Every structure is written in C-alpha cells, then in structure tokens.
Length: 223
Ligand code: NYM
Image (cartoon, rainbow, N blue to C red; front, side):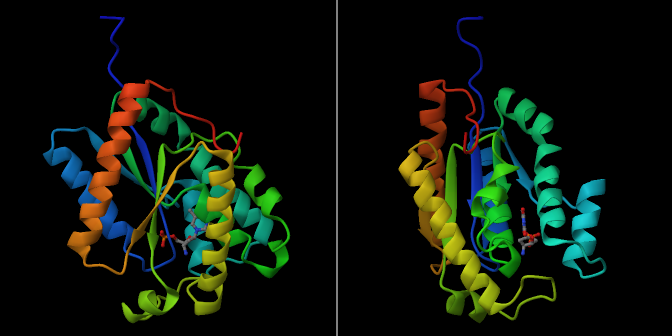
C-alpha cells in the first residue's frame, strides 16, 4: 500500500588507496547480498564507459595531458552524469555498492602539488551529490599494499602519491566524523580475503537494516 512503500536501497561506498582490494571486495559483497535475496548492484568511478569517462581514461593512461583542475572537474562530472541512474536504482530498493566516489576525487586531486591548499575547492564540485549511507575504508599500509605486486603504469600509481592520498582520506574522514552524517568504517584490509569479507558483510547488513528502519531519504554530500 502507499503507507508502506518499498524501502530504498542503501548506498555503500568503498574507498582506499590503490591495491587495497576494493574491487575484489565490491564483487564479493554484491554476490553475498544477492545470495541473501537482497537486490544489489555494483557501480564504479571513474566510469570509463561514458564520453567523460573516456577522457579520464586517456588522462590516466597518459595519452592525454589535462590541467589538474580540468581533470578534477571531469571526475566530478563523471559522478554527476551517473546521478539519475543512481537515484533511480536506490528508489527501486536496490542497494548500490560503489567502488570509489567523491572521496577519491578529492583525495587524489588534493595530493597534487598544484591543489595541495585547495581542499575546499576540490570538494565544492561534488557538494550535493547523493551521500553514501556508509563509507567502507579498506585500511592497509602503503608497504603492505605494495607487497601485493608492483603498481600498474597508470598515473598516480607511485608510493609518494599514494601516501599523500592516504593522508587526504584521513582528513576527509575526520571532517565527516565532525559533521556526523556519513559514517566511515575502517576495515583491516591486510587480513585474508575471507576475513575482510566477513567484516564488510556485518557492517553492510547493519547499514541496510538501519536505512530500512529509519526510512531516511538519501542525503546530500557535504551540504
Ligand atoms: N581517481 C578516481 C581520481 O583521481 N579521482 C576520482 O574522482 C576517482 C573516482 O583514478 N588511481 C583515481 C584513483 C585511481 C584512478 O581508478 C583509477 P580505478 O579505481 O583504479 O579505476
């Protein structure tokens, strides 16, 4: 009946440095939720399949040079262009499990020397995006991440950059903590794949029930 509309899906965002295991865990979580009979869908940013995403891909593969602010805005545009689909999916009751979001956008861009003092500018273009119901931060030291095999050859895949990115993630977490709306969950990503998955499943199951019980609409990021 109209008094009992179908509850919306939860919006779960995974963040972390490169090689923390995000992509593996996003896949496992979607499978786990679907096996439990819950509607779930994976998303990822950057989405390289769109026109904007193709520009980002060329930049990451160093086939194209772009100004730091320009490419930052492209990463943000790549999220905004996905908003209609994101909102529709959540409102249909499907949980979205997202591999990177605006936190990666700000953490990576603000790790560049040109934008080091521009955290607020970096955040501004993502203000008002759908806010996650939970951020799962796959926590691993740079040393542990690098033991998992060498970096690829994409832009940003260097030790010093990754260490700075980690610091920027910490700043963003502290700001969200002070604001009190978007909860971050740190998961020890140096554990085995199964152990990490177990921790994540518990967090996500409780997030989904609290989203359903609270009946809160999707929030607006940093607003
Ligand atoms: N990245 C990702 C950004 O610099 N800004 C963003 O907004 C997002 C979503 O792109 N090194 C960076 C982080 C990664 C790179 O991501 C490609 P992936 O998840 O490796 O495809």
